[in-house]
Image (cartoon, rainbow, N blue to C red; front, side, top):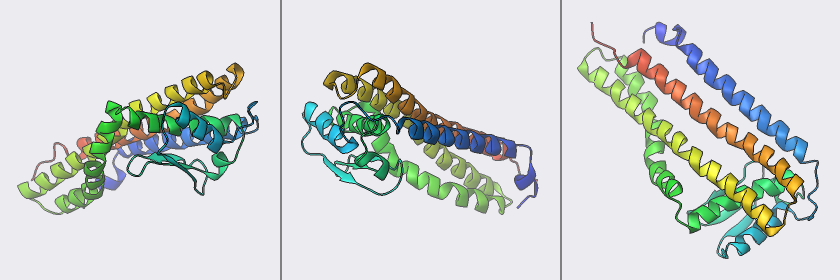
Length: 234
C-alpha cells in the first residue's frame, strides 16, 4: 500500500471531521447536563410525557421501554418501540422531556408515512452493506496494479457514498422530529413557554451532532475521491 495514503495532506480532512464530531458531542452533553437541572413544571417524567404525546397523536400501539445508557434514546419503526435511556425515562427535567418528545416525533412521522423517514428506512440495508464493503474493496484495489484494482477502488468509493447518503437523508428526519416535539409539547401544555425555550436548546444541540456526522462523512468521501478518484496505473 502506498505510504502516502497514511501521511498525505488530505488526512487533515479526517482530522477536521473528527474535531467537528467531538465538539458537537461535547456541546450536546453539556447542554443536556445543564437543562437536566431544570425540573419541568408539569412534573412529568420522560416516559409519562412520551405516553401522553403518543396518545394525543392517536398512537396506542407503540411500546415505551427503558434502556440503559445516556442519550441512547431511539424509536424503532420495525417493532414500534420507543426506547428511553436512564437519563430520560424516569427524569422530570426539561431536557429529558424534550428528548422523549423528540423520539415521539419519529413515531408520529412513522404513523403519517413521513417521506424522508420512509426513504431513510429504505436506504438502511444498502447503507449498511456499503459501509461494510467500502474499505475492504478499496484496500484490495490498492494491491492490484491493473484496471481491476481501479474498478474495486471505484466500487468502494460508491459503497462509501451510500453511507454518506444515509447521513444526509437523516438530517431532515431529525430536524422535523424536533419541530414536531416542540410544537406538541406546547400544544399539550406539558412544558411552558420558557421551558420550551430550554428544550429548543437541547434539541438544537442534539441536531448539531447529526450535522457534524454528515459533515465528517462528506469530508471522508472527499478525501477518498481526491486520493483515488483519478488514480491511474503506471
